[in-house]
Image (cartoon, rainbow, N blue to C red):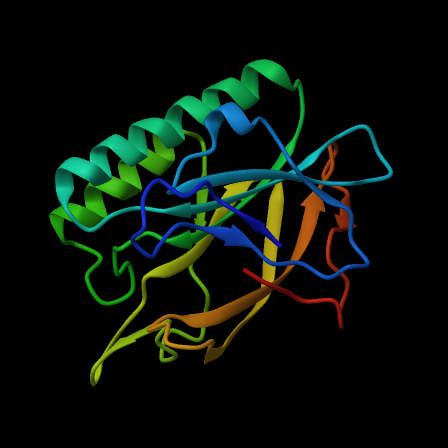
Length: 191
C-alpha cells in the first residue's frame, strides 16, 4: 500500500492498494500531496503505466487549487515521456451521473478535457459509490489517457468510510491501437 504524505493530524489523504504480485513504486514524490499520489506499475515494455490516486475537495477554492495541481502533473508527465498510459482514480466530489449540467460538473469536465484526460462513466450508474446517511451519490471515478477501462464493480466500504470500494479491469492502449492487459481478469484492483 502507498499512502500520501500526512499534513496534519486530521484523517484523509489518498492511497493506492495493490496485490503483492504487482510491482508498484512511488513516482515523482515532489508532486505528492495530501490529495494526489503517483506510482508506476512495472511493465515489460518501455512505455510506463502510471497510476494516480486523487481527491478533489468539495469547496470550490480548494478544488480549483487541486485541479491546477493535477494539470501541472499531467503537463510534466507529457514533457517527461513521449508515450505513457495514465490510470487515474479517486473521489472527484462531483456527481457526473445525477448532475451532468451542474456548474461544478461542467467546470471539472472542461478541466479534464484541457488536460487531455478521458472520464470513464461506468454503466452500472444505479450503484452509488458513496453513502452519506441515506443519501447515495456517484463521486468516485476512473479517468486517464492511453487506458481502456472495462468491467467496473462497486463493492462494500472498508471500516468507517462512507465510500465504497470501486474496482476495474484496465487495458493499456498501445500505439497503433493494440491493447495489452494491465490487470487481467481475476486480478482486479481496488482503488
